[in-house]
Length: 282
Image 1 (cartoon, helix red, strand yellow):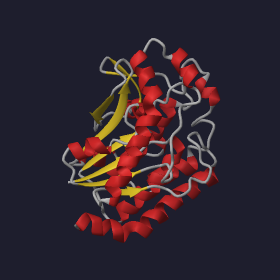
Image 2 (spheres, rainbow, N blue to C red):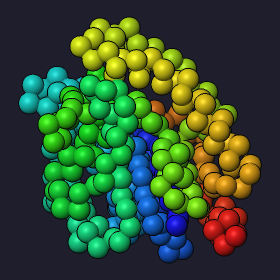
Image 3 (tube, rainbow, N blue to C red):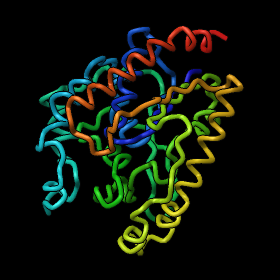
């Protein structure tokens, strides 16, 4: 079985969109997909086989004030840096339609990673195929301080990257013997401790397990990256990671930068497509 794991990274994930669109052109479709944060928010368009949809999102919607900005965070009806209902309901249901039928028809497994705020642990939840409000995607994307907690089934969640930024271990344990991992940080990147940790400790003081997950995130992330590099060298996983992110930060909304990073991801996948096919054919 083929598994695809997509790291998050908010706006940086447009790199992954370029990679996934190139895979669609080659009809490389996985049996099991898992994404973290923007990795799943963008990744579902790969599952629905809507090549170019994410590029349109990056070109036509993400650069607008209606999509993101501090004014949305200050709104008592939203309390999020992103315009939640616009991004997760209006756009996929009206302005840039998401193919719910194609998504429902996908025979494989699609999961999102979320962090349970009470336990601080990762949960790997299967994406509903009929939720037009995309609540699970909202939960997986819920960056601390920039998002409210998202409640699903009586549990409260934040961004999946807090507890498992690159869930390749989960994919291997699930029985996927071939694994493609798409990262949004350059190879050799070393995550540092969160500079806003003191503020987060105070803001989330009622959730000590969540705070501990935040404290240890950088260490756990760096361990995963090192292990993943070993697996890559052993030929056990195929890893896409950008050499450059061209200054795109996680809340980037400059249209030209987003398009440049998308195109870079597409070209990177195009360059590696023969190597990828050899890996898949082993």
